[in-house]
Image (cartoon, rainbow over the protein chains, first blue to last red):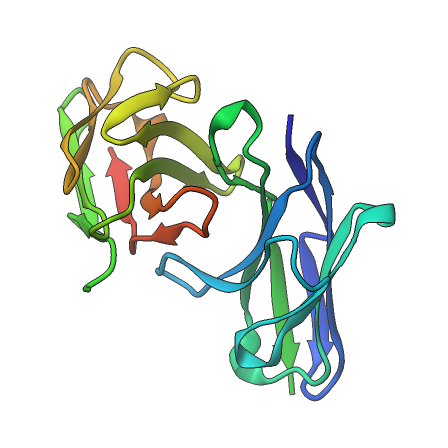
Length: 115
Length: 112
């Protein structure tokens, strides 16, 4: 069965500082991995996705994530945080086991950016 | 395409009443998911349709919950009777096999 663990329900950074949001996954087969962002009172929007091509994936708004099979990790990073990055971030896994691609989401990490 | 459209955006209802949430997925997406989001439990998958057929409804909490997808462009999630603990944000999302899920804006349900 697939699952996702996001370490840290809240991450606080200063504007301009490095952002690192952690995600570890469990899957019985090579998975697809995703990061989504959710702003208040909105749905989830895709930031980036890994689908077995390049292990370093670049997404929107300057975010990127690296797939590390040996560590079963897919951490999200951004070199310099902006105030507008404050939001909830979700990691998701979808491995197609059982013939269906059903995304399973982590509990989310709230990114707080202070001046 | 206007994206995934959910209605209503907000619903306030009294305990015991029937609630119907609606979703219009993006054309061409053959998978449709209903999720529920709460502070306590995060994002929970309620039900998954593939080509309009319910494949996995193991996440539906009780018989009070039911979902239908009569055609590729419309799905409903019904709660009857509603209870205060059903208060949550309900999301509809769609995808093509293996690709990312596209979410609607959600319906915020409050049962008083």
